[in-house]
Amino acid sequence: MRTLCSSTLIGEFFVIGFAGLVAMKDPDLSMTTVWTVSGIAMFLCLVLCGLVTRPGGVAFGWALQIALIASGFIVPTMYFLGAIFAALWWASVHYGRKVDEAKARFAAQASSSTPDAA
Image: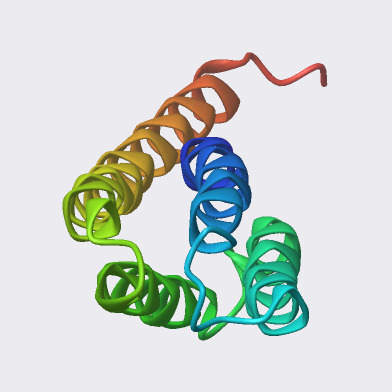
């Protein structure tokens, strides 16, 4: 699960950075505000890459997805991109857990089928 979720978060890192560039063109927003918010969101993406397998990591990831969709109020394209990344997040969590379960099952089979060296 960690690999799939981390890949999604790294993709989001770049999308947030590009959305910050687009948001800078809004005359109502200061560059400081745009890059503070974008920088915090980008930093959270990187931190979540390491925390995704810890308790609450997936929930924080969902919170980030909601924030990414909500950023569509500033950059309207982010409604679409946020929804795409939320779907990718769901797939990463869902299929990542299935892969982890399969790996554990195969490891258990391999360890039980090895002959004892007695």
